[in-house]
Image (cartoon, rainbow, N blue to C red; front, side):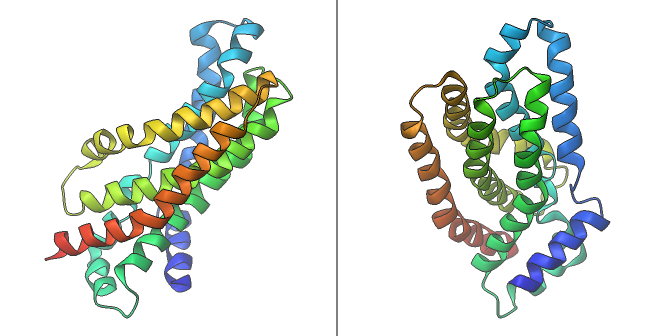
Length: 218
């Protein structure tokens, strides 16, 4: 499983698997928002938590279709299915690689991009915490959706349609944690709900993804 994780990390860097692409898109979204809503600092500060979370979510979408696509195209997925490593471990390793190359960089970059949107200083820590808790769910849910479209030609649009509704609860509670933290309000309820979503997704979806992969590989 560790060898598969290292392999996917190398592919993300060498083969254009999404490393850096999400960060670039996240930066573009953050820079363009003030042009769309105006330079008023008070307004930007209010919408910053939601905008940053939405930008992170959309950035995660960019590389989802490549989670299994490269392995499907070169036949590696068939070899992985017959290897000693169960498909549940394969799905978990894929999700972890996606988070390390997409979710983690977005989490670390978000506070710096928050400065561009006049995010209150009190919200930097809560924004980072919410992304650290919520982005693993985005990667695991995205891995499940990617497993659903394995073998589908030009499935990127279909993948987005499938995964966006599943991302809504994570977006709601993640943005709420950042918003409440910025406003100095109680944040424990949305933090617990966000953590529950991530833990539930991590515990359940690798098994569902493995089941879907077995069906698609038959």
